[in-house]
Amino acid sequence: MVSAYYLRFPCVDRPGVVGKITTVLGDNGINIGSAHAEVNKTHSEELGYVHILIDEAKEASINRALDQIRSLDIMLGPIKLYRII
Image 1 (cartoon, rainbow, N blue to C red):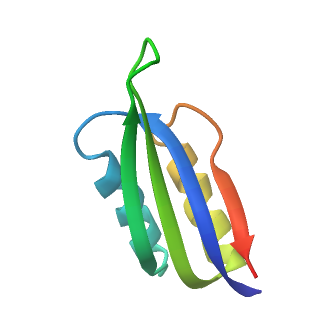
Image 2 (cartoon, rainbow, N blue to C red; image 1 turned 180 degrees about the vertical axis):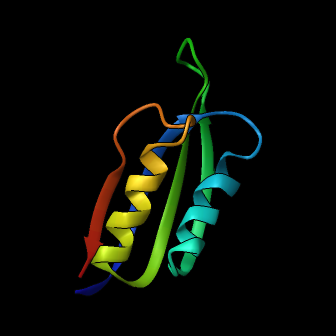
């Protein structure tokens, strides 16, 4: 199934995080429509969020990319995935 998606990644706040995430998406043939990063400094460990809107992509490609991103040393929680209808 091909759809657009919104993704939210809770991750560490350090240089290169956005690059790691977007590289994995690109390596899986996923085109990014827009991206935004923010930091929540109220936590004891600085927590960052990367928000990404995906142009239409195959569900299998999204799932494969998310599995690869979950294995990176930058994630601090579960990835939120919403299909845009």
